[in-house]
Every structure is written in structure tokens, then in C-alpha cells.
Image (tube, rainbow, N blue to C red):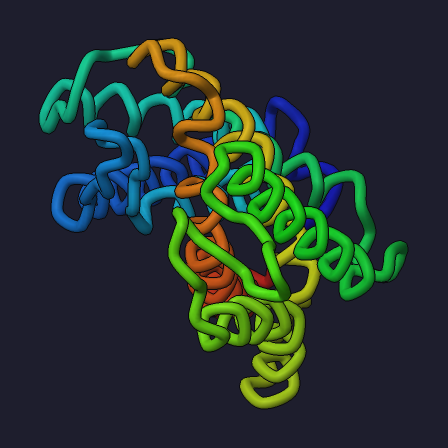
Length: 255
């Protein structure tokens, strides 16, 4: 996206406000219709929705200010129309950052200035280590007598293989998608963008906010939230790449 798209006058132009309004409407509809929660330790701790992907898209297309407002407005309206628990302003902040962070990444990181495949490899390694470490700290995962145990029971080797395959797919799939579907946008950069945003907002901030709201330890929610992001991050990446590629061709955006 061209630099002048991020100027205040451009972000508050009629055209940009119209785009933002349309994307906010899409995000809100997705939150109201397709939103569901995965319970963790008796609480709705993992939120699953495509709305976050649209919020990220809003930031990339319409700029950081509109991206932040989009995420915050959708979160507030969702809490009013379809509440799933007590309102907490921290979640609104995280939702706003989901639109702000991708916009800043696209503003300051040029297409060819970084090796995104390398960065994505490092990220998945850190995320995998964090997931395993959280299980070990909670005494759910242990290694005894050459056998891996989960919650006191021997862990089937297929689960370990599946985990490694999922981690490998995290890196390989964006490359395959880029070459096969001929997207005009860099899927590896989108994957990096989504990963950074989800790591800050979903894994770090929202996990902490959940521990504050429900009075549970941070580690009580962390493993499930990390695992959910193994699936959500690639899904968000594909959704954003497909829409962004079409938007770029339609509006001639330099993204």
C-alpha cells in the first residue's frame, strides 16, 4: 500500500471511510453468526471467529487508525448484541491492535526487505517450544523411561508426528499456495503479519486478560490458546491473501 494511504487525510477520506464501514459490517456479521468459544478450565477461553481476519484486512487496506477503530468497534458491538461474558476493556484494546499491528507491518516493512520464510520458521519454532514448555510447567507433559507421557498416560506417537507435520505445514503451505494460486500478494509476508499480530494480541494480551477476568493463572489458559493459533493463523492467512489479492487487482492498490 502506498505511503500516502497512511496519511490522516487519506484515512478519513470518504472512499476510505466507506471501505472501512463495509469491512466493519462484514466483521460484525461474522462475529454474530460464526462466532463460537472453546471452553478451557470451565471458561470460554478460546474465541474462534473469522472476524479477526477481516479486522487485519481493514488495517492493511484502510490504514492503522481505521484498523484500530474497526477492531474496537466490532468488539464493543458484539459485546452489546451477543455477550458471551463480562465486558473487559482489555479485550477491546487487543481487538483494536489486531487491526493496527498488521497495518504498521505493511507500512514499515517493504516486500523484499526481509526473509519472511526464515522469520516464519523461527516463529513456529518459538511457538512450538512455548506450547511444549507450558505443558511441562503444568506437569501435563513428561518424559520417563524413553516414553512420553501426557497427563500421566503414554502419549501415542501419532500425536507427536501430527504435531511435527502441523509445524512443517505452517511453513510449507504458504509457499505452495503462492506458487499454485498465483496470488499477487506475498503469502509468506501475510503469514508473518498474522503471526505477529496473533502472538501479541491473542497469545500474550488476551491470555493475560483472561487470567485477570476469571482469576486463574496465566498458564491455565496458555496451552489451549497456543494450540488454537496453530490452526487459526494459517486460516486467517489464506482468507486475507485471497481477499487482498482480489482487492489489489480491483482497486489497483500497491500492497
